[in-house]
Length: 69
View 1 (cartoon, rainbow, N blue to C red):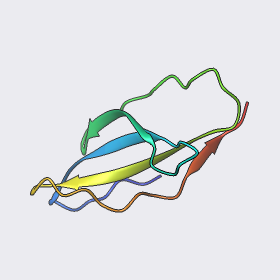
View 2 (view 1 turned 90 degrees about the vertical axis):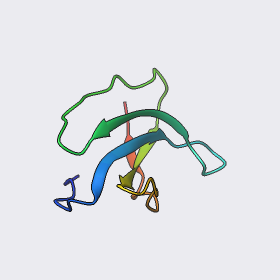
View 3 (view 1 turned 30 degrees about the vertical axis):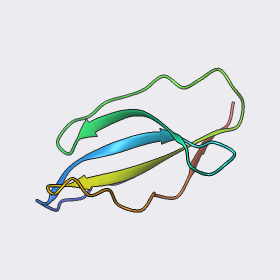
């Protein structure tokens, strides 16, 4: 997934998708940072991202990205 080049984006929230569609925040990264996360030991887990701007507003979620073991 490509990061935004917008100067208004401070960073990204990382979520593990849950059955209710809301997800649980598992981390965050600054817009200029690279980071990796170890996934949970469950099968068929999906993750999604949101962007956070300079006003603290969070974007709509990205498409879910499945991780299949």
